[in-house]
Length: 198
Image (tube, helix red, strand yellow):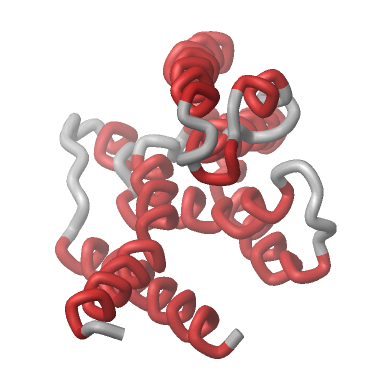
């Protein structure tokens, strides 16, 4: 292959090795301490911020894909969008999976209260390890593969600790930022190795 093309491929592989875990870590940034909040209000916010854009932008994207179906990935279009309530649609699978992570987090928070975040972290680690045994149906693989990053985001940054202590300021320490970089770098390296070997 031409060196320039090979270079572009390497950059693409590196970016795709960590960009989705990074999104889930950032989503977890503000998710810690959900048990302290009004669940009904939080659910309304998520419906507005995740579900509404999922369907609106999904529909607009599906219209564009339908018109240019011979040029778009997998030829997706309006027929695929009609299944979007039960089958994550196109690149918007992220919003779909994130919403169900939030629902799980809400359920744990309602039952376990202050222990919910740690319970979610433990459960997400189990799901990540068990992923190869999980059937490839619905969104289960994506959920098992990314829930751990959402959960880790809550603990790496711990944005609500300062509010709980009454300081009113939330900031991530340098060491925590380093932990995040190592986490994402390791995941990216593992993804690259897996793609090259399999």
